[in-house]
Image (cartoon, rainbow, N blue to C red; front, top):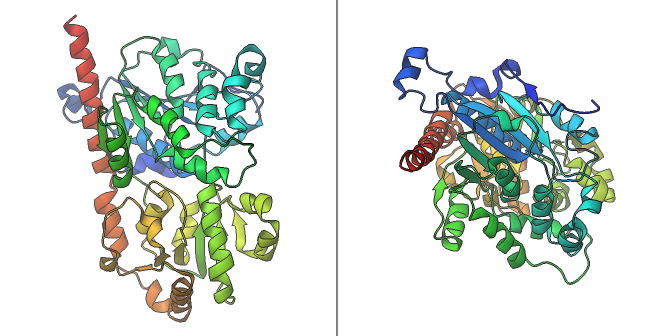
Length: 452
């Protein structure tokens, strides 16, 4: 695919196999639509702005947002922004890869944009963006890239009622889309990004003076202030931002995560991990400290985290080459046939979507406490979950799985983790809370307009 039309791609069908659409109730009949209570966003257009990322937690949340808004009656528009320079806003191999891996984005219309290489010559990107980046200031770099992304052609013909942004660094693009109009803005923060950058900088090459976590957090907070409401995915994240930005409105809304296929048992003890710094460091801890204690236990690692190991720790990758299975098109099959799901998390911040997916599968789980950061529950009440916070305990739990497979496979009824998932991460609860927030913001702006 050499390019994507700026006129966008129109979608009239549901995602393959139902996708997230099957996870939400369909829009109500026209009689209920007229009454306005059953589907509160009927006749409204919601734009969701998000990074052009796939196979990660952010992507899964965006999919859930689109499905929720559609279930509330809204027309939905997706605008994906690439976090790197490209030859043209809608062209290049990275777009081909992104589009082919995001068929589950069930928007009514999709747009694509990116900063271009010409930004280096025509603007002050080198001074204001690239120079901070070589010192590790990823917060500033992403903001400067977003400032130089163009609002997609054709979008100006849309009547937009609400913009839901994902990640603080998309906010400069949101301002371009608004073009001075009074359109309410929701910002999903997706964790404290400055912490992620500080973690990522450990594996990068930068020159002194190094950007500090505090410097990057200041940039993040400055752009968060511009949202009408900041939505947080977990309690720890909300508590921190509420303290740092007391004048900003905050809301805690756990995302709806599509339930994984119910685990029926199989031969694989599995780890699911995408390519990010927290996953790399967590899995590296597991392979160096836990795996050697259980050399005969077969473990399969699914996801594109293998790319990080090939780049950062070739010898460890080669020693475990047979365990790395790479990215799979349908992760549901992995959970369905798992003997046990491992979550050896020692790094990372914010809600872990893969941990929530594991809970939904009903599979036996061995995890560190860190895997469930930001979620309040007593793990002792979930009988198919084992918490192991050091290498020896993790290895002992793995040996237990190996010698007791049949009892662990027997799941003819809903497991404890599935019941917890249904209570905390249901699609209905998510859509209702998002709908109440969105309806209130849209109504407020309408009242302001009517009183002028």
